[in-house]
Length: 96
Length: 96
Image 1 (cartoon, one colour):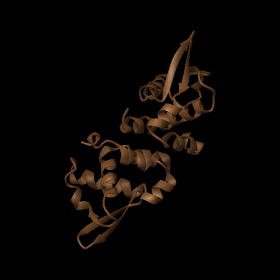
Image 2 (cartoon, helix red, strand yellow; image 1 turned 120 degrees about the horizontal axis):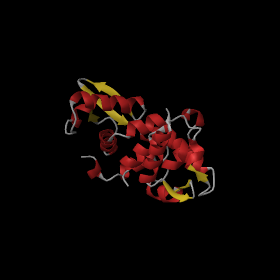
Image 3 (spheres, chains in turn red, green; image 1 turned 90 degrees about the vertical axis):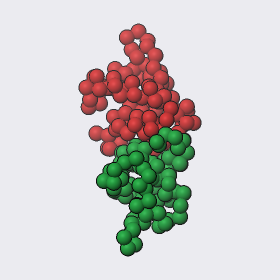
Image 4 (cartoon, chains in turn yellow, blue; image 1 turned 135 degrees about the vertical axis):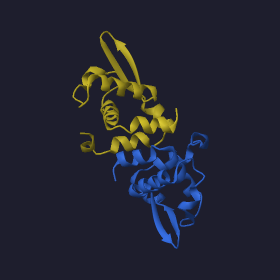
């Protein structure tokens, strides 16, 4: 995974918000369907999840009709030290 | 300066390359005119310098016909710890 891909993935404020929200809950507890409050269409949201998955920021598994998420925090931190810390420290108002 | 602006500025490979090249020389020794080897037009290069300046990554001053640069490394490191380190660690082949 390249720095370019990581910067591209985290360059979007909605994707950073997804990452921050996932960081606040235990692994595998938050389904994709619970991100409907974000101000984007369902297909855009699906695209954001796909980008985050492709860049190695999250892992997903299906449980019945729900697609659960795990933030690959430690793995991403190992590869790009400090980058997620900056995302977590970002003022939330910048999101909306 | 927002994280969004920092990620936008460093999201471009040419801008990361300018930052890396400036990190390798003493402050105020490298004029803008010495970046002609980069594979972009003169006006695009000028835009890249402007973006880097606006985001607080570099400072410029004119000396005669030359515009000299200083990377604001410590200042940027204070604001976004770890981000420049990732840029410096990026494999150079990713630039070209």
